[in-house]
Amino acid sequence: MKDDRKEFAEFQIQKSLELGADPDVFESSKKLIIDLNEHAYAYQWNWFGVPVIQLPADIMATQEVIWAFKPDVIIETGVARGGSVLFMATLLQAMGNGIVIGVDIDIRAHNREAIETHPMSGRIRLVEGSSVAGETLEAVRALIPEGARVMAVLDSDHSYAHVLEECRAYGDLVTRDGYLIVADTLVGHLSAEEAPKDRSKHWSRGDEPLSAARDYLAENPAFETDPVINGKLVMSSSPGGYLRRVTD
Ligand SMILES: C[S@@+](CC[C@H](N)C(=O)[O-])C[C@H]1O[C@@H](n2cnc3c(N)ncnc32)[C@H](O)[C@@H]1O
Image (cartoon, rainbow, N blue to C red; front, side):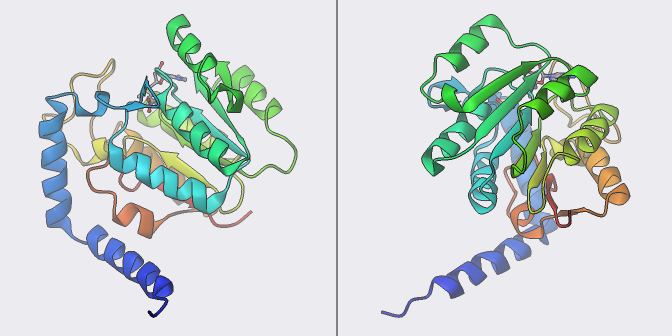
């Protein structure tokens, strides 16, 4: 039997690029996500017993970039109930290396307990405070070992100004080949009527993460959008949100 792994990997890349260039599929996916939002679909999932507020496609995409990059440190802004930091810690545990630094302005006692008593807790460090406050950034930097390979996920306050500030602060910490994942970029594709109304704050086109990511890319040539991972991001909250550092 022929070893076709290389051809299969090329086939996957090709199909992902084709999918990313298909506006009809993107529109169908967007429509389905809007309908699913009526059922709070993103809130229905758990990772190892703890709620993770993500669409399944984003979990898969993040798994792929973590495996490809093999980080020593993953920073996530926006911890909520803890499922996403636990998900990434589970991958690091399986890979035998690394920590997740979870940053949130409000880590509620019951959520902290769920994270700190979880079997994956040994790979997690929590920092409470606004993700863009000077003391928070200082605390995060102090947790990063010298020479560490660093990536970041931005999933906190989704306003344009906050995400752009986060891109600048955390983009600086991401190391070469590492990812800066800007979550909830789908909102940049939604009209005011289509944008979710069930969040604590409301965002709509212009004041959302996609606009911030685009402006950050325009001002920082060290980052590019990864066309392969973004290409297959249908049924995703974060299409176009997977940025990769391509230079030091
Ligand atoms: C969408 S939830 C995060 C979901 C989580 N990443 C997951 O996948 O389960 C957003 C979180 O951002 C936090 N947040 C809001 N504003 C923030 C800020 N300025 N700095 C840090 N965290 C903030 C909220 O407290 C909330 O827990």
